[in-house]
Image (spheres, rainbow, N blue to C red):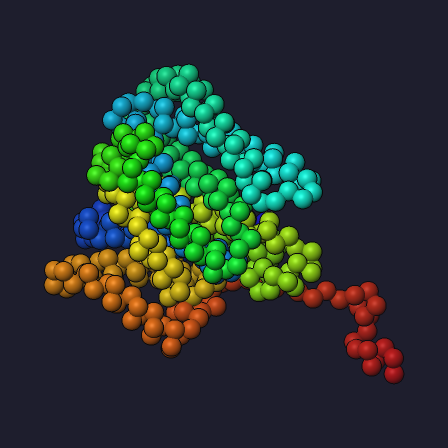
Length: 420
């Protein structure tokens, strides 16, 4: 109870709600127009996806360029759910996605316990088993979903339209994030054993594959509503400032609590020295998977929120050049700093997406690809640890446990006094 209502916790929650209230008042009073409202929401979304990458790279030490691919998966998965409800008046997308993620998730957890006892099972063989089971269960989820969907649709139609839309929206965002996490688990099995540089190349290849699949989503994958390279339209604009604020606070709190736990200390130990961590009995592969899956979950969550800001998705938004955006943000803010990541994400949105587009001459925003490397060079030379470095606000700062006195020394002031 003391930790829950500590001074730093109350300060953090109070400050967060105060900032949200001020922004909401400014938006309601139209002091902040729709353009700046959108920029602020994009900043919150970028903070979420960048915290996920910081968990993978900044805290676990795995150089990943695949964050944008999982961002795209979450975006399209969530958009497909809300599109089917908005346009087709059907909950089949939500039901099938929920069943597929739940069945696959339970199967992955069950198989992980069983396969961990099998000696000599290589990662590729384990990947094949997981993939086969996931495909079978996804097909089963589709069949069951077609049977259950009419009942769920009728139940949602009994609710007020606005309430039903919010239920479908939140379900799409959350289950889209779970899809991204499960795919990251399957993808991570065979490649997490690679060295950091090779791992980065493999994840970059994954992002390119996802982009190609989205270009052909209407023909190759069979999702006609996604319209492939033409772009997906008709997505309801449900991502409000409230939802961005709620999900950002949840992501920050989850990350903070993880890093303060024994799991978090193990995750960080892998970054510091894999050999020493392994010598201490830490399962390196287990904690690499943990960081990678949770970071990808955050990316999928951010993608789902982004899809419902402008109501339009295009595969070019998720090309490999854009995949460097969260990497740039965490380098600017500081590797291993949650505070720096959030600050840099909003600065990135307000300056590069807002000021460059609004106040500078038309066409100048294309100079961002010149501004990015210049800023990176300056940061590397003057501030190698980023703007915030290792600094965290009190709520996020790691508090080391106090040294306890042993029973032998409790009654003495010093060893010299105990033994004159």
